[in-house]
Length: 259
Image 1 (cartoon, helix red, strand yellow):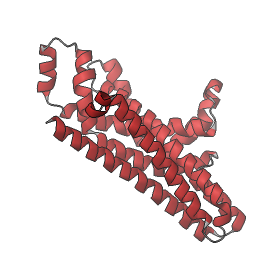
Image 2 (spheres, rainbow, N blue to C red):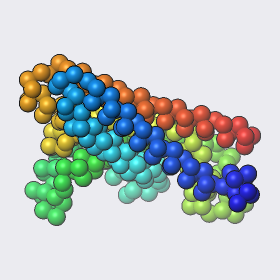
Image 3 (spheres, rainbow, N blue to C red):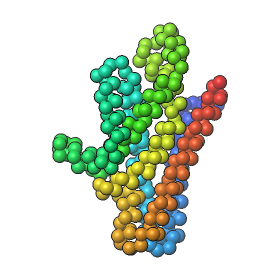
Image 4 (tube, one colour):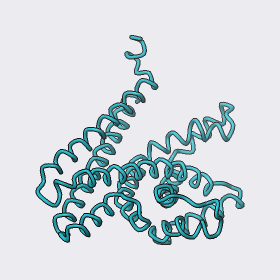
């Protein structure tokens, strides 16, 4: 056990990181809820609805962000493929997703897909998550493609000279280095995704924006409600930015130790 702690076992590091992240999220929402309860009307009595909307917003952002990174890796690799049957569809998909409004994409997934194929009918959360993940995945694809191209060719040549196959070279040599290079833009895309998640209110998902709209409809007091919604968004984006900054500092620290 001492050996594991002293050498920084990777599984232990992952467990500690996840535990710290969950504790951070729990503390964040506890602070938001307690602060909103102390606010005057019409905020204090509806603090639970604000907190519920904030949790839905963050959950939607994180789920779509994780899937979007996987989509971005797949599309980025596909765009670098030598096979045109793989490269062209990926480039066409990225062109479509980056060239059309996100709101249209959310509405298309929720309303149009079931009309074309009834088995593709999704609930509000799933539809918003799919649309957001595909959208941010298209932007991630360009960042990951640039990261792969930024890895020195000597790394690939050295791996191939040692007998690694093209797939193993990509898996164990090129892709890990590319991911470390593109951590800042990927995290910035997740932060932007949090704000874009407000468009999910267009299909009735009770996230933070729709929670504010419902409270405004009940109280007819839009100014304090919208200020509160904006403040909660600001807190969430600041928290995500802090996590991003921590990941960047950790990456630099481990790179310095490795060198």
